[in-house]
Length: 117
Image (cartoon, rainbow, N blue to C red):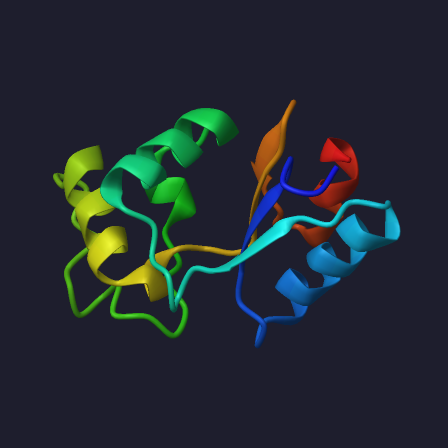
């Protein structure tokens, strides 16, 4: 199944490590993308949002990010504005995101991974 799954991973995040381990324990060797070092493009973000069924605001991480400094709490901002901010500042992307062949999800809570494997 290698290559069928992609995880947007932050190795410093315990939730992200848990999800990666759960995938591997299930016999899945995902493509591991450190999204902080290899940020997704706006187009990749749009595709991930479509695949997960989330809106951009649902994928925004507020904790330990420039969320407030950038004024992203402004409800007048469009999906495009939020996607552009995440592409420019990948630390704003909540993690981990798992993109699978049949289902994709933001794995928060971490146990969500079991619904897609």
